[in-house]
Amino acid sequence: MDAIYCLPTSFLLIEKQTSKEIENNRLWLKTSIECARWLAFQACAFRGHDESLDSKNRGNFIELIKFTSTFDDKVASVVLENAPRNAKYTSPTIQKEILHILASKVRNAIREEIGDAKFRILVDEACDESKREQMAFILRFDDKNGFIKEHFFHIVHVRDTTALTLKKEICDVLSHYNLHIENT
Image 1 (spheres, helix red, strand yellow):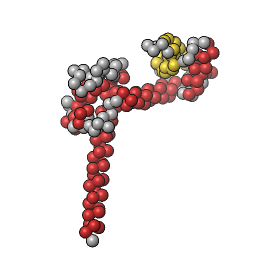
Image 2 (cartoon, rainbow, N blue to C red):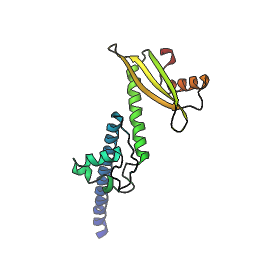
Image 3 (cartoon, helix red, strand yellow):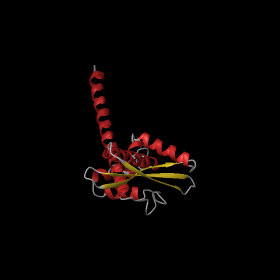
Image 4 (cartoon, rainbow, N blue to C red):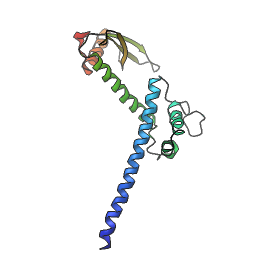
């Protein structure tokens, strides 16, 4: 008989703890996303030379999270050193994932803004620091008010810079984002 009364209480305790963990996870993630978004819009580097705990400057991303936590006690209580070791949401992998999601949202917004209108493609290729060829895409189009807009759209690594390879990459990117070559 006692077990029946204890069972619901323990379930409620677990459920309450889980909802608190969920709330903390959301706050950690939201803080990381907002800091990444701010750094991306400001075109700032994310990583620092030394991101260890005893470093004076751990990089813009971690320092911005630290700065944000000084204004919000709730954030301060759950981020960085106060976060579980396996759920800090500050690793380079998490930073890149957040950036990829933000970039995807920006590309989708640009794609929507272009609609079925005519657009121009500006493409430039160059070697990156690791000597890999990469190609950058800039899209130029007239907005609904007739103003010319130009947006960086995408960057891809290419195996070589022959005309055939570059043409294939251009067609692949346009196709992937449902931009029709006939509208160029």
